[in-house]
Length: 217
Image (cartoon, rainbow, N blue to C red; front, side, top):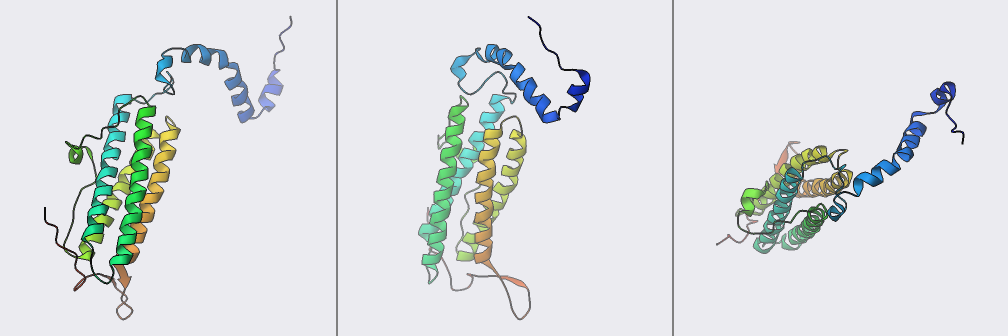
């Protein structure tokens, strides 16, 4: 049997993507042999290069943060009272429902990677990078929510970088979550701040008589 070879001139004429495709196809048997190892690990193959203990730590920190966000938005929902109640409660409810979807996505991903989602309420504030803060005016509630979203936006951006090309599934998941968090921050900022037409300066809304029910633990 004669094995055909690719002449050097022809090989140089083949585009980079075509050469990569040929390389991928030629490696199939080697890949099959390697992934037969530890079949019980499901989608986590020997080619997964990130340290799983760090991956679980990052994902569980994000999971704890999403739980804190759900609780904070629910707290603010039930504290809100004033002529703006309907508008603000609608926003808080929409946001906590988004955060609940996020935590389910993250919990599912932890399980898929062979870890255990940590839903233990003990120590949740230590695991989370989001804080549970409240206030006594509608402006202070919105300010705390905006601050929390801005913190999460920065850290989720770092998490996207952490996963990078090594775990594109987790990276894309956090890219989608990050988009939601940016939308939340934008919606809160639009409510909280307005431009004074006389001075042109940005000022807070929902101050003065727009007060919420005081939080009593």
